[in-house]
Image (cartoon, rainbow, N blue to C red):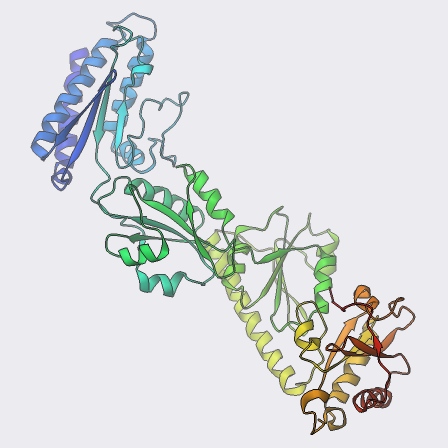
Length: 543
């Protein structure tokens, strides 16, 4: 029985050699190591003939170990366990599917990672032999009861295959032109492998990269840069590999334009995936409904899109979309418990997850509710179509608004205040309101008055000194701004006008009857110097 096992082993090895002999002819050099205690000897296999001889020699050693620990022959404690471990290693080597899994993942069961299994999983003795190698090893510290002296226990390492002299076949090859065209500032996260074909370990890096790309399909693109061919690009980007391949993520975490960051974490799919997910775009603002409603005081030309989901953090799909459309939409997301949540009810959402859009004129539309998520890629594609259609609608409305109301009065915010009422502006007329009704009335009056030549006339002698800019301010949320002019913040006035001279830090206020005639008269008096100005208490700054 024992000898039959050895014969079967050699038969399987012969079949294995015949199948893979051609592949090994292309190897310039294949290294196989044996460890005897402290000694480390490297035998070089220069051609396939010597390689075949070595395989036969190695598997004779395997047979000897099988004979030594076979339960029929060895009754010592632990012998049966060792025999099972030996046969487990052989089982993987002789099974094409298991060997394929191990070559790809470092685990015969198909689990991703560089190191296969654990001591309890039955694979602890079938380990990755380093980059580019698939090997099973019997280590001295794991074989202390093998019937030899304490320090002379042998370790046999049988190595099949190599990772040198190859290039990633499944990853998109990136050159300088593609990098500029497809990666820089495109809003898409990329995982890039930089390598030289002579390096070992390329297959392992390619394998783990493919695994992460597959799990984030649609949100992540992957590619490789051959730094032997494109050395100029690698030097320019600072990704030139030294002794082994290197992985980089084109990240949008630090800046809106994106930048390359090297991955220096562990060699598992889980670690790399967590790193990549952390560097996916984050252009969606996590808000409550109250925070979101406050944004409607700002004047935006871009449409807004909000995702309602039960997720505690912003979903990967929405983060990916926020990168792709970051220059075309303003993204928000919020967490809700279910459709009975007050936010969902107020927005009219009857199924989750849902995407609600707002046009630049404030019009709301439920783009999609009860979104089915088949996979990341198809969901991103479907939502992209919805966003594209909504963007076209917004452009049409914006064009109509532009033609009918070119002199719309903007709402003052921290973002636009300097452009409208900064030091380059001689006089800024600010219409302050505390209700939606007051806002609409002031907007109508100031839009009309601002177009009249009476208040837009320029003093020939002084040039643009008499030019005027106009803006609206929400007094109910910008009380700190109003304190810069008045100690009470004009709390008693529901509507008022403030004429502000930024260069001189002076102002004049009008809280009388807000009609087109009175507003026109006040602004005319300001320009003619008929109104007394007071010093501001501090520099006004909107929130």
